[in-house]
Length: 89
Image (cartoon, rainbow, N blue to C red; front, top):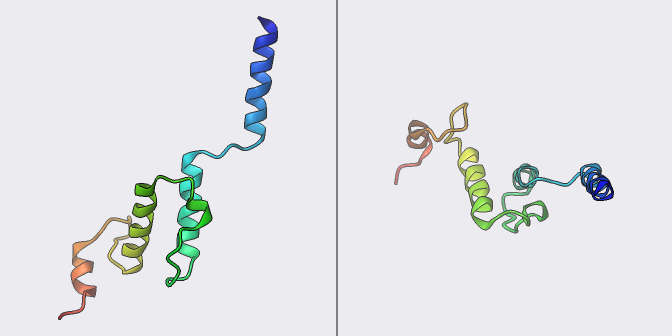
């Protein structure tokens, strides 16, 4: 029994030492990659590969909306800013 506990503890410490990335780490890396790529680049950056497709889409859309100046200082969509920056037909 003690041998099993020792092996379990060793395995856990090895996992911690190798720096296993969490899903949140992947999300943060993806956000940085999407913001850093040129506007004309529509390919999915490599750091975004581990993400669910819906999460990747939300990151891209959030980056676009933020880039249009439609968000307030808290990152929330501000309808007034949308009206101010939308060109008339």
